[in-house]
Length: 509
Ligand code: FAD
Ligand code: DLZ
Ligand code: SF4
Image 1 (spheres, helix red, strand yellow):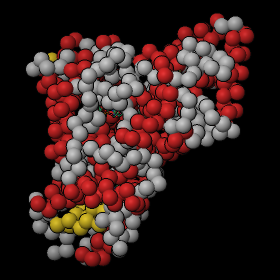
Image 2 (cartoon, protein in one colour):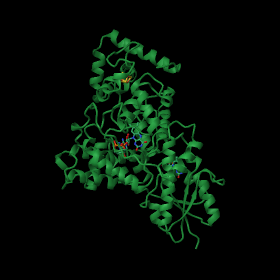
Image 3 (cartoon, protein in one colour):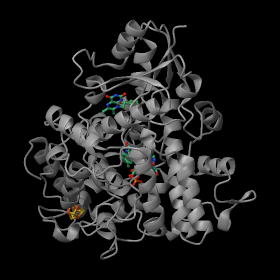
Image 4 (cartoon, rainbow, N blue to C red):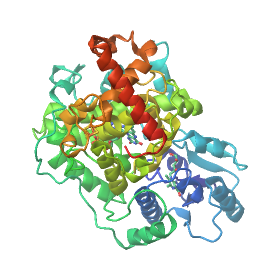
């Protein structure tokens, strides 16, 4: 009997995949393909491409060892059609298969391409997530506002994670009050577990170095895990060494320490090498055995069963046009320094340099440095979205777009958040040590030496006063603005105009 093709995409590298469960190893053939269509729809960071190709090759070998037949196309295969549908058509022609089983991709772009494929593709739900599309829609239906905190409590009840009966462990749902301490002087911890590339990964690194040399991002040193065992070891390392202090310094930024106590597992989780449940259970276990405090463990679990699931729910509920939303009408071009790090704003240049070197920045760098600047400067949110989708090893539209279009740029007009995440330089100064080495003065509010975040912040509030002026969560900010003298307000607006004019001329800033 002619079997079917089973598509396994680069971010679906798990035995738990719904399409694999539906398949039959005795007659079906797995299709995996390294294609330029996926490797170039945005200029991905070379580390992201290398990570996925190396992990795809190892997962293919793992499936073969389990008895599956795998039809694997390498990037330099001369017959490569360089699209996923093209490889399915080629696979069908070679094997006689007339049907494809797939797990729903994480981007509408690819869902549509599979729907349009001339061979019927049956897309099964991606049940690697805690909350299905239907469950999220049911939760969201009829609510005036969708707020993560309420959704998160449902997920806690559903999973039983950190619950004592029907009550939250320790009596509170959220321990953020105990988190978010400013940056410590020196943390004496060197971050995530680094892996030495094996021969298979080295071969991929050579390929990526030759084919993607022009992309933003450095390939060496490459230390990501590229299989499940390596990812599990990275998780263990985080739970044992970093989780206990994760909460305290979750929002801190240090020039000399790029990872602080973050887990650096998002690329493994999003690609399928780890699952949400095993991660959260490991964290809960650390708390129950007295190895990590509740504020750290609750904060960490919330990111995964709260924010991550909430963001995915928003993406699929909003549909393919979400990435084109631009509620604030921002249309400035993304500055070149997002690719070169060439700016005197030390916080921005350090965040971009780190992104270039690691394909990683932690949440507050993404939100309150590069994201905050883009929002204050009125950059076109779609260009911001494409930058974030390209430069991080964990970026796929289902999670990146709601974080960028929604949380960071407020381009969705308040679907993800009730107010924009904006701040002046004070916040960055409090949470980091960037300002000490900056050529701008964080204490200055206007003029050539003043920190641009300061006057851009006030100019942003002024520009959008009709929209935000009556938002109760922003009332204090507007009161402070209105309490300033006319001269001071005007000086801030003039400084912002002059800065933005320099930005528009691509003059150094
Ligand atoms: P930790 O700080 O250790 O957190 C643990 C885990 O929680 C993460 O691995 C991640 O899976 C999850 N998590 C935390 N915050 C979020 C969030 N807001 N949304 C979804 N999951 C979350 N995350 C991505 O996975 N892919 C992206 O493309 C992405 N783009 C972002 C863009 C912007 C502008 C912002 C503000 C955030 C973005 N995030 C994205 C969320 C978050 O910044 C990253 O998940 C996190 O920095 C990954 O590092 P970590 O594994 O060390 O996370
Ligand atoms: C991100 C990515 C890259 C760089 N390359 C491939 C690839 O060659 N083959 C593949 O199957 N998947 C790749 N991916 C991941 C896909 O882009 C991802 O599955 C979709 O964006 C949906 O999330
Ligand atoms: Fe960034 Fe302003 Fe601090 Fe410079 S002074 S590092 S621009 S916040």
